[in-house]
Amino acid sequence: MIKVRRIRCSSFAMAGSEAKKPVAKQSGGKKKEVKKETGLGLTHRKAENFGEWYSEVVVNAEMIEYYDISGCYILRPWSMAIWEIMQEFFDPEIKKMKIKNCYFPLFVSPGVLQKEKDHVEGFAPEVAWVTKSGESELEIPIAIRPTSETVMYPYYSKWIRGHRDLPLKLNQWCNVVRWEFSNPTPFIRSREFLWQEGHTAFATKEEADAEVLDILELYRRIYEEYLAVPVIKGKKSEMEKFAGGLYTTSVEAFIPNTGRGIQGATSHCLGQNFAKMFEINFENDKGEKAMVWQNSWAYSTRTIGVMVMVHGDDKGLVLPPKVASVQVIVIPVPYKDADTQGIFDAVSATVNTLSEAGIRADSDFRDNYSPGWKYSHWEMKGVPLRIEIGPKDLANKQVRAVRRDNGAKIDIASAELVVEIKKLLGDIQQNLFDVAKQKRDECIQVIHTWDEFVQALNQRKMILAPWCDEEEVEADVKARTKGEMGAAKTLCSPFDQPELLEGTKCFASGKPATKWTYWGRSY
Ligand code: 87F
Image: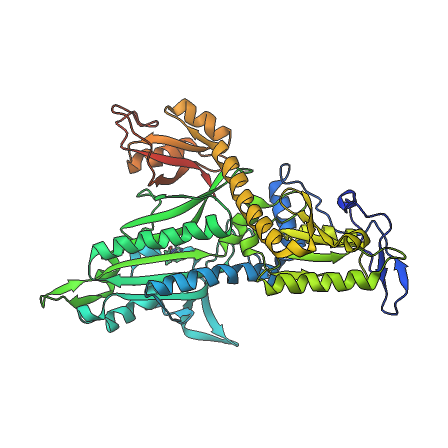
């Protein structure tokens, strides 16, 4: 059976230099022609309709399937593999820091949830509750964790007695539920998502402070080294920090197409607020009663959405090699009267050689799709490198590699396969980061006055401005920029501060500026 999928836009002009008359091999060995104009395509362009483009990419690349509950999405193997690869980096890193994994229950009793009132108050509308089992009402409804401070800290109080019980450093990989009402978006804002949440307790503030930054550095590495997405490390304003904590640090990314900043991950120092509330006390080495210092930190499946938004293009997803579950897809390009078996054998040998060298390679032998269809399919799925093997390649003892990031075609001698492919994958990883950074940097605008601020905001910039760091001024900026597109707010004050010249005024209040801060619309 030939499967024919009609498409709205044929991308077969890109199907490779040798795509004259592709044939597919039937199981009986007979050759049949496969329709050339079958394949996949996007109906929306990234630059023209970003929102529609994004939804289409995550579905067509087989990352996401929509679900019949709004704001919930199925993570298909293609996206789950990315999550697992990041996990394979992060989990050993935190274990090196002596952080241990654990698992606390999904359900929260109402008493415990409401214990820390200040922290829960603003979030209350997002908490989902279980009120029934079968047909009968539960005597006491049970909440589903939106985060686990209130779930875990009663036990921290129980487990921590003396200074020898410290530090207590736990992490859990889990799902959380937040019943969001604003515009759900796969990965970016969903009602259930996956994350890791770290919760640590120390005897001293110094230890807590140091860990906040160590974890933030791991988050930077996830974005920059794995997802090839440039981020800015910094501190949140009082208004934007986690209300239950002392201070919040974050890595901030930027989506040039929408001109919006996006919080990539957060690392909080909670100070002693939760310790007070949950009575997490210990006897210090002088025999005095003291309160612990705590941190909490998380990154979530949002990371994947940021990566899709930053690198994807009009042909679909673009995966950085370090997170691609298939780094190289090898496609046979058989022709009439060619040595089809020889080509197939060369494809298998190529996949074996690459796999043995630790490269994640796969072949696509499906006989009901043409090579051109397969090119489009694997481009849609964002595979960093495609290898085509046709009769000419076989004769010349070479393969043809095609880069997903820039379309470049490179002939590689079979003898140099592993070295060259490794080099190419490294180049692609670096190029994706460099291009993304250049685009991001082009969006950064340094301003000094309110007029410049408004103008830059209208141009969808990420704005670096001198600020007086006063909460009322941030509230005022929010109020003055309120509109259809959403208000501007602070993203972070970068740790890497440009020089602040003496006498510099706050762009919004005219008062003396105390720091440079990034502002913009955000997700
Ligand atoms: C929604 C409902 C209830 C965010 C919520 O960032 C509570 C909350 O506490 C809530 N949404 N938050 C803040 C989460 C803070 C903190 N938790 C541990 C983190 C890192 C991991």
